[in-house]
Image (cartoon, rainbow, N blue to C red; front, side, top):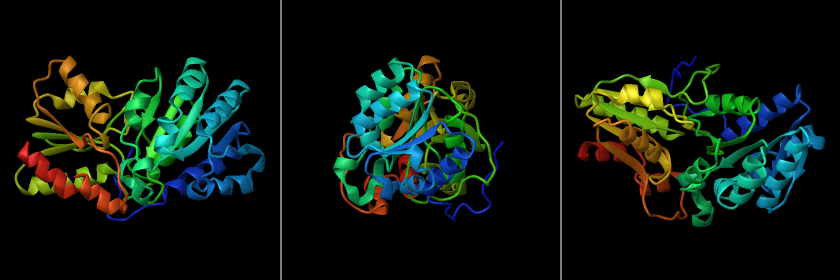
Length: 317
């Protein structure tokens, strides 16, 4: 069960700290958990694991494809590998290894792809991933999560390490605003209704869940009744909930820090179309653009993903 945070304007732990601290805690009782890094230990905080659990930390260097191969080998021998690198290198660069050495071979690889979309900030276009979800969706049996905050991230890490297969979690490395109360629990493949409404249905994932809630509050001041769903599991998608909540709505809006092609918006649209639900869908995300250099705040506005811009888009839809 989950509860919303008392103050959504406050930020929680840095998400990288959340990942590291959760792994360190789990390692106390599970000697099969192994952390793999691709020369970003300082950026991710994985060097802390190197200090506390040196025998279960592997520095693979700037060789991400090889890192996934090593992870597959560890899985074959009974270990539970947890890998990290920036989102484009965790998906686009290593897709063949994840697909063949991982999924096709029946191995388990847990992947943390950090700083997707505008959260890449000054690392720029070469490090920007607008397509990571689209790629991993094509891997049979893969699980994709996009946590709204550190509370959800901690739960996802713990849950992934109970499961077998390819598991991908994408998120900012830094702190994001609180959505959930500490101690909340969730279910893989199950969306969360954060706010009920009768007119507009907003479906969001990741740190944009906070923007979706802000947007809903502003829309309600203008007389709209807005429902907000946190679809933190993009694959497998909660089709049952989506079909149920879509019926009777005047419009459906998806919000994602990702391309509108192949991500959350595409997944939702497919379900709506295939089930004959006659409600128009607006996908809010990035369309036909590469990343660029700037602060995360500048890039979020540049790509039209602030609460104010989202509200304007919905009103024009």
